[in-house]
Length: 142
Image (cartoon, rainbow, N blue to C red; front, top):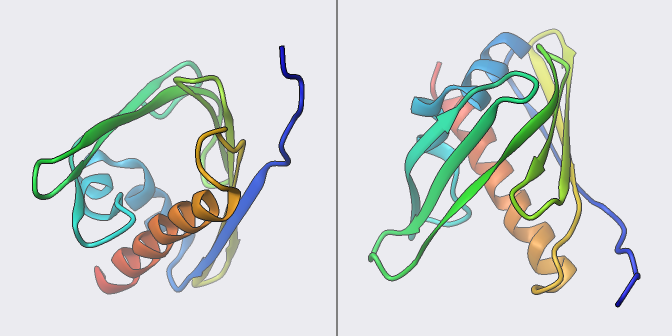
């Protein structure tokens, strides 16, 4: 049995919006469905989110051409409103998201355990692309 551990990956973005708006758009399913994709040829046709300790979430991510889809899901282990969200994905990998308020700007720092299938840089790039989509969505929806 392999026991090697890969270092966690962190992606970050500073969003020009107050923490209350960032938190709402991060956590409400109607908003999640608007920003949760890594590229223009994908979308999130379904999202459900019970943002509390032991609450579950699920977002369906799908190619717009219908060729592929998967559910991104997990269970929350820690939720501190406007500060931190921690969860375990369905495959057991851990994620921690820290929200840091600075007036009309909010820094979002997302750290996650990598999976074993895809290269680290591909994973970092995909998660960063989704975070960048979130930033654009928040900043353009006043």
